[in-house]
Image (cartoon, rainbow, N blue to C red; front, top):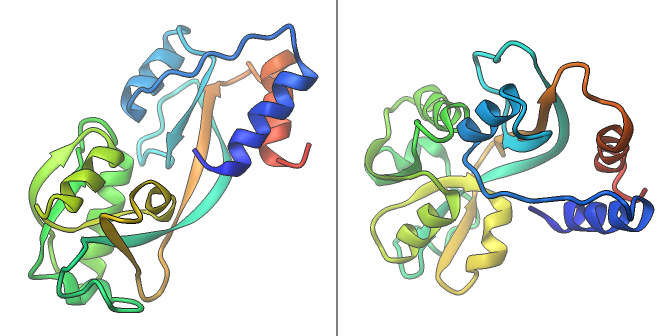
Length: 193
């Protein structure tokens, strides 16, 4: 979540007071399954999976850079930016492939393009937990830049050279973009709404 999305939900509540929005904290894979089964109207699932589930559409809503998170005091902590290739010998903590396969694969692909395979020592289904493990000194991680706002005193977020980005998407069943859900999507695409 970012400030623009929070403002979007506030605008939606104001414009659609009869509609109840329930937010659930689920990993992307669980969201996609619940959407496909009709148990969830839609979800913020991170990035588009490489294998798109049938019957689900994806709407881009936000782009953000990926950064390298290191614990305070780490040898890289004071750098203004870092190349992915220079991280080849580091121990990585990652978002688990089971919970977020698209994001996990994207980070692996970025590292492969930089000439190495990340030495993954720990995983978690949640990016926030990965950032906490970094703060505890367990390793480094490549994560979305927005997480820094929650961890400013315990991790350093170092911009990556070349500024790789991810595009966040909202997923819902094809043909369901009508009524209240369509209104929410319009606000997401134009957060000033």
